[in-house]
Image (tube, rainbow, N blue to C red; front, top):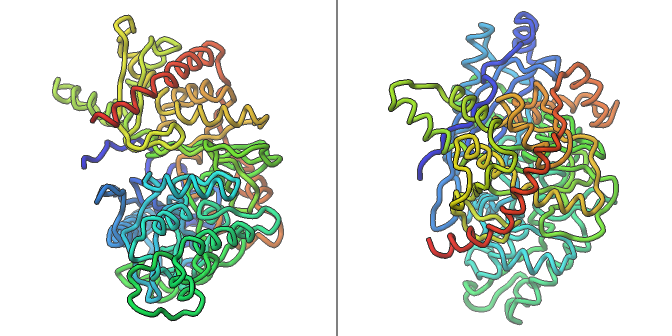
Length: 570
């Protein structure tokens, strides 16, 4: 498959670094803290020193998911090769910037895209290729579990993948001894501990807000459901541990689900140490020494909340990349379950409503790449940042409703709008105003279209926000995507200077929090220690944009029939 052009981000080499002498001393003395995040298209490494607000070195590696047997996946080799290359890039940055070697770390945090399916047998062998959050093959399981639990279980949640494998009678199911997320897997290999931060765990199985752990009542319901589907002979086998005759027909795990899931930990709890084997996995040169403390591994949603200081009630954040999602910290429980909303948690365990859209800015990047190629072919080549700048500024001159144009960014299926497969579409009527400004505004609006549908459900529930924080490369061109997001949400949108560092910095901050968790909660730590001097730009919604986006969204909702027909026909 083709690789989409990368959206621009803040320079990967650190802007406004700490004084070099202080940073070099922190690295040399083993006080530096490392954050690693495995995103959909980039693996990032971020190093912080004594001041958690300041990044002192970075590294990155680009990668791409594979579409194999109609499932989105990455291989284990992809994972470890990418991590080592991102870490090696960080080491190069350290050497060039400070002239020192990084041999010892104080703490490490691992973050990754949430959800999905990584089942292992008793020997630690992966039973089927990693099935990522992007897959939409779990519809039957998600629907049945949502009804049984009385809460929305999205297609991408790990429990939906487990139960779909049961429904499909996949032969590997009886061998499952452990299942986790991508962050949980990497952490396990680095430390030997099968644990998960509560935010990431909340995308595997529902969390009980009273206990901060998996909901025991729902675990029992799941086990009873699976047991009820087994033939009598297999029920006897699952309880006695012995099976008469061949076992190939068994279609359920031979342990309660709770025994297969990672232990749940909260922000600030120690989650193990870097082992010698783990150090060798990170640093193939053998320079890095074991012994660093690790914080609980977290999902990209949780680290995005940390990176934008959005972990307190009435705050929220939007993360825009290959996917786009909003996280809103709740003051109270929602009145009703909604298929558009996940109920997850912050890394500290506070309840969050999540609007997750499988499709984010990748299709927009393809359009920008095409215009970049046109500029080069015309003899006036522009770098990627310049192309984005020109096109985004042109969008500001477009009509408030994008001139009757309509864009769907659906490279993959989109559960919120009940589309099982993606077909990117650009649609206009004969009387639409087909200008470059309108085209680009329609594409930018399209990035936020499905997200806005989900956020309107939250508004109908009476959920109110003081401010939304946003991060991701799409917000690099100041005042454009941020302005359109404010219109889509009809709420102020803030973009902080630190936000573009993203989840790799967010998980490094969580790792640094290990030292201070006994003194203050996470929200206070972020406000007092990390964001006290942070600058941000706030954009309020403009009434004309709000009305224009609302008109666009009405058209977008009506046009979903065209999108679904496209997936059926092509």
